[in-house]
Length: 72
Image (cartoon, rainbow, N blue to C red; front, side, top):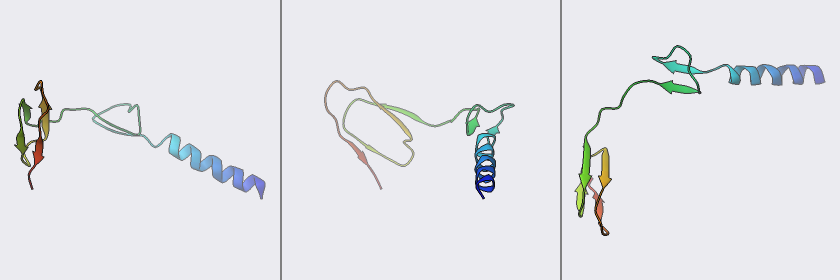
């Protein structure tokens, strides 16, 4: 019985170790490796601003506190 449990444990561990997936990669280095870029709008703000659904990357570069409001 011990041998069966050890064998099943070894099989499960080996499956986890060798189940790496890569998209556009010949040899992935982690569980999921994706090579490519993410094209999105970049917006830099310096004052209070209301963000919309199209603002996916926003950087605040102001020198004082500001409020970023998320619109529905």
